[in-house]
Length: 424
Ligand code: GDP
Ligand code: IMO
Ligand code: MG
Image (cartoon, rainbow, N blue to C red; front, side, top):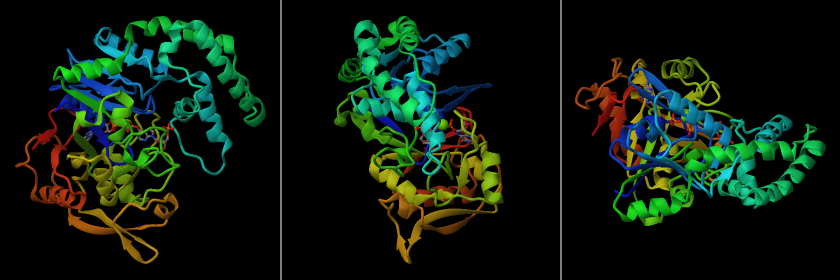
């Protein structure tokens, strides 16, 4: 299994961090291929909790190599503070953590535009994480972005930044009515980062292809989820990168045939942070119970997550578009205390029943979820590590999910810790 892709099968926060940490034990390299510090991947080891934003969750396993690929947008400030925290907690990262020289840099003006664009737009707010993600990917596509490797050619870096800053300051002055940014100040700040990032920078594309040629195993850690993918998600309420499995090749520089397994991480119910359609959202006591029992508050922004029943139209679509070979069903224990559990099996749209994800987000805003009701199990599954020990109703729930989304559930997660995992 050369490259195994780990992808979110919903709107993010499915528990990717926990599963990547589990699977890291048996691979050589763990690599992030897209997104940036908008991600918040939580891993619990013993009594310690770690929230990783940019550094792959595999960093917590000794002897593993971690890679931040070219498809990631790197905020040096966020990266260095994450490194510092890990080092202060006893992890050695120098020499085993590498950043692609091709990765684009998040600049201070990206974060400033992110915030300004959100507060400027009364309608059409996305509810971003404010980490500068959209503006950085926009500059990449517009070919005025700055890359990690550019930091080591100061004159070139400065001349490229001049163009970008000139453009941004027109926006700040005339559109957003914000203070302009100062070229020299940013240049000085980034010259400081250049020194600190030097030991981490490498041509990770070559590194990964070479490792694959030597038979090493790579885990590609996705951020966000299928429904937040820029092309295949609920546009415009999405992030700005390719979070589906197809993004692995683009964001790491590895060939498509190297990806032999795709594990879709699916929460046993659904959550979403930020704006955008969410057919199974519950604004009632069940929604509140899911939020409370599941601790559904953003790992990056602390925002309460919107909660609802499992949507298998979303699940089937995610399995389809990612080529999911098996599913890790997470947070099953959060459903322990419900008398009845609903699963959305299809939508009603204009009197018609539809079983496929509508292409247009405006249509998704109008759909009515069609539910099937299953009995709850009313027993604790928390920390269960054996399938046999699950209550029958929980087994029935898992089997029904498998049927509805057309993929086998190979991992069931029943709690935050490593041991609270059922490997089938
Ligand atoms: P990610 O972004 O996909 O890595 O997910 P987050 O870390 O943002 O959110 C998942 C949250 O659920 C974290 O707080 C995890 O510690 C927690 N979690 C993961 N798996 C389970 C599980 O099986 N049961 C429970 N109760 N919590 C879990
Ligand atoms: P992980 O990897 C959940 C959401 C934001 C917003 C939209 C765009 O932890 O699953 P952005 O800052 O990316 O421009 O915001 O995407 N979003 C996430 N939601 N989990 C994430 O990451 C997310 N990363 C971004 O809330 O709606
Ligand atoms: Mg998260």
